Length: 252
Length: 309
Image 1 (tube, each protein chain N blue to C red):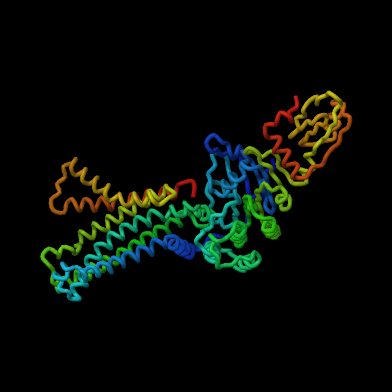
Image 2: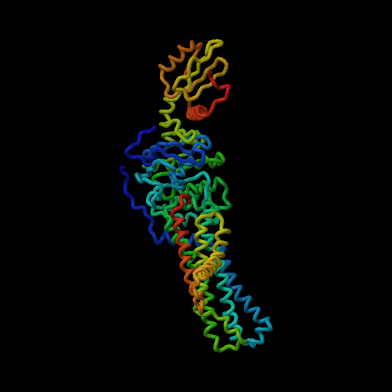
């Protein structure tokens, strides 16, 4: 066979940038909704603080106190919202293109499956990290403010410590892993999203069952540490499975 | 079957694909030489789209081999995909993008993207860059698909029923662009359609696919010289003595027996005439559409009326 050898391999950085832009635009509705929901969550909580008599008494309506409670409580809701949108993003990143068959159009263009996967992972992980950054930062600021505010007894525990943060991140990793794995198979995003949201509960049941079966002691933080480790390991394993299925499936 | 040439851009060997019990492609062999336009004809469900989807690696074959530009396998490397322009029957271009965004996105994926050519085609097709793909008609989407397929100057253009469902004016514009693209030096085109006149206009070589197999293959002139219709008027109360092995289709209507043969020869014509005591006989030259119809009808179970005992 005598065909002219041409260097037609597309320049990788330019190609990956184009794919990331495309995937970010593909998920733009969810990304915008996530940002709007997190901001709304903080604003709503600030509003509740102004209206609520309980917090009016506790925080004595000083600006510092109101800001502290807004940031501290907002960060807890922010994590929940991040988990929900992480499931939505990871569950939609493959399925949106498959449901409208634009995956077929993409499959005929030069990018490889691996390049598409890198782009999709970058968008999902990047967006989730950005969403998670706001609660982490606001919680850190609230931590710094804690010595200067007056709180009712017991209200100090609204602040997250390292272990709580690790648990939150582990839950989000398992949500992404579960949604990603199921998304690599299906054409609609409903089931992958649900699978993502159920993954932390399944892992919790699994860790509890194993602890009970093997009679593993759960003193102190032992159970929480086991749960964090399992969530990280299984979340990454599920995500790896999703990547493997996406790379090896015969149709786009 | 066309014998595989040294410079075959597409080489397909014993390609088979099943969907459950349905045999979509049955041991297909195909060789398309560099610089030629191959017309893939066939009725609906003949296996044309399945064959093309396997060429594009959108579907995997059950058995057989595909070689594109000498590269073998069920996957196409990015280098090979850069050399192919593909226009499907149904376009799945991102519906939420505008035309400008589609072209901007695709241009970043090809090294040899020709922005000037893309803009030229945009204005020729009167497509507004600001329009969303979701707002385009079927014809406009087909035109956008052709721009995407042609603006990176592919060495191989694969068109899978691209004019299906388009109005005659858009179809004309589309074919005009394909013909212009053919003038590009060395470009190979695989054009699949059930519009015989479209294929006849653009194709150098033609293959008629029926029930997942090539019933005939050859250049348009070759087929016209090879496949001819013989019309024999039989004596009263007589039936044809035998059906020649060369017959691809036959029809008996009262005393008139029409048999399409491949290959035609003068000897065969004289034999049929003499052994049937023909009252009169003549040879009818066929155009590609008539060849297509006879070949397709000949592959289908014939009606009682058309059967000859």
